[in-house]
Length: 496
Image (cartoon, rainbow, N blue to C red; front, side, top):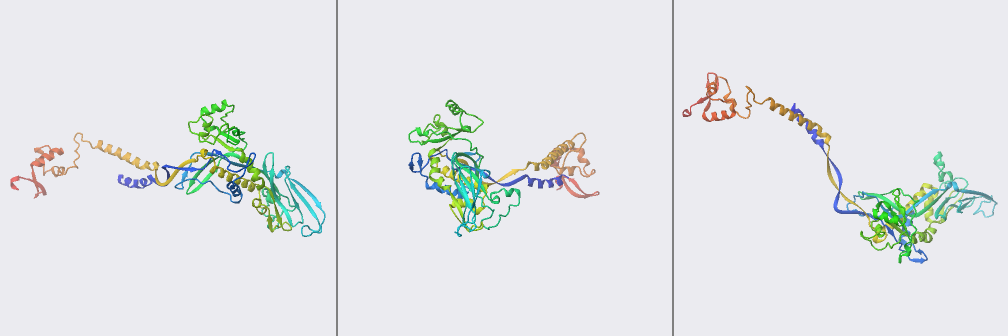
């Protein structure tokens, strides 16, 4: 039975160790992802409080619409890296609102005209779609060239507004037929199916927080939810020589107790329930600061202060975004069918031949803000742009002990030990019980047939192995035939 159970142990021992692919960190190597605590514009001074937008930043903005999905370039030697801690950086955030319910429609009747190339001879109607800000677009029925969508700026607060104008009959401009896929109540409310729509979007500086990982060379970065309602400090850095006006913000969670006390003494309300605190920077943040710096510079040394100059935030709109987010797309065709489109390329991309929705507009502005953020992260102030650091991993074969598979072998060993102890106790020599002789062949000689060695027993006690060995040294036996068969017979030494 024991032998059978012993054979049954083998499958269990095979399952005990599980080998699998794993990644372990390489000592002495670090992975990095670009980020910055402080961005200072690099443009040319063009006027009071204004600087030009660098070509590189213009390319980043354009890429947000024309080539979205770009990421910063991490440094990971093996292509497999982990970043266990979230990290924050100065960047830009977007926020879009569907304002289709704020649209006003004004329809006017138009008399006929002799210019049949531009207008039908039967006249028609003009449909003007407008927002309360004043941005509007007018569709002229029976006209070969017609306005389809428009985009422009709205002030107080500064936002970008986007309108898809009402065209009379709802028509797919690619086919000239009613749009398909509008049979359900949900799809009927989309811009494409209802034939009009509007959005209002903002682009503002913010502090973005991320988590990331690099697996098989693929960089995956996830932006954590942001509270765009948090305002920046009204930058006072301009009072320091050589420093432009700055927007500032402090991360409360990384401050020391002394720094929290310093902010409180400076008049700030430090509330542990909120992470971000608007901060008016009163020192020059451009020089390098060490860990031994005193308050308030110590907060920047600890990467708790985030700042961006106010010049870039203003010039970005006045020198570039103001014209970038402006224009009208015009379709060339008849009866709602547009054989070609004219207008700004970026607006045409958003309009996407009429296949546009609020979700698409929101995604486009999110791509733009991400692209601007990526540029800022990789071009921040060199003294305050320490990258996020992670572990460089490499692949190994690891093993895992599946302890549940030990249960049967362990139980078997336990019962075997118990059986051994019981056997020892049960076979111990007590009283007249025979000794255990299997370790010596002499027991077979001295305790063979009863008649063959009776005289040996009479001469010496041979019940113990030691006595048998002593007695065996004094006698000589050989195998001889006797009346009772072949037996071991004692012989005298001189007869040998």
